[in-house]
Amino acid sequence: MREYFLTLLVAAALTYMLTPLIQVIALRSKAVASVRERDIHTQVTPLWGGLAMWLAMGATLIMVSSLNLVGKAYSRELLGIFLAASFVLLIGTLDDRYELDAITKLAGQGLAAAILLFFGIQVLWLPIDGIIVLPTNIGQLLTVVVVVTIINAVNFIDGLDGLATGIVGISAAAFFGFSYLLAVENGFSRAGAPSLVTAIVIGCCIGFLPHNIYPARIFMGDSGSMFLGLLLAASAITLMGQIDANAVFAEDIGPAALPLLLPFAVLAVPLFDFGMAILRRLRQGKSPFAPDKEHLHHKLMKLGNSQQRTVVILYFLTATLALPTMISAFAPLYLALALFIFLTFITIGLASTNRTPKGFHVVN
Image 1: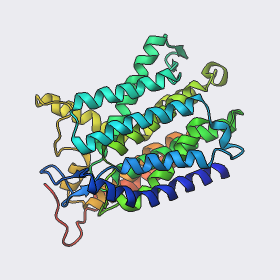
Image 2: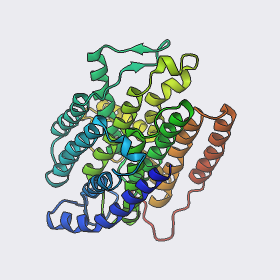
Image 3: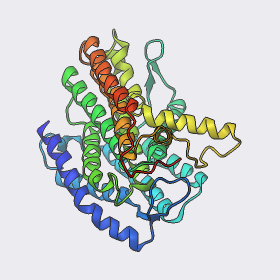
């Protein structure tokens, strides 16, 4: 655990130090978010935050490769995850600068998923009526769907300062806890690509957040949201591939299902917002990727919440769904339920006391 904590700190420090440099480069390259009618921000803000995270991840992987435990996590799967993340980051970086069309971005996300498949990272089984081993072509198709869905869910929720960064950080923390405790409980190697990748993701989010919190000096952009989304999806799929579900969970299907279900539980907020946005736009006869001002965070702000309070509410909502789900695999169910109730009360309390700070203008 100490080596993973060190890895997290290295990633956080590097991201924090690299982000101001990327901010200057983005401004000079005109990779900026201009102020549009649907936007919350009120001034031109540089993008390419994902580039700082990618550089920090690459440097972190080099710096911690000689550690006794973490060094054992370096594998073909880890290489595949990094290459796929690098490719999707490239697509996002180009989109931040040149505003690529939705079809091009979707194709790029599909190609990134294909890179994962090339390195043997795919969904192998599903917890349906026991354990069903999927045919190769079905597993590959499902892998692409999972990767593309999670990437776009993270992308869609990135609408307020610090929102996507914090939600991904909380989600990665829950997933790291699950993958590490799973290894401890069942005697797996603690040196796994999922644990290493999610530890780095947590560090990148922590390091980026001071620059991205309200009022944000830089946005992660599509480069960051797509990059982080792919890392979370790939970590979940890789963990599934390392588990012999029939052997380990022959009598308890709950923990067996969690490697697949946990990413959807911890990302329930962006996934719900993503799904509702798609349905809403299709009903209106628009493209599923047409922008609007009806996202979950927009609705919370229309109720009178400030941008800062809205972000905190969604942080707690994410934690309410993520942490009890993770804990339920290793602790008595009543403990997970107690935590869920406790966090739910806090979330409801925050959402029900709408107090707009003096001088703050709510965007309608």
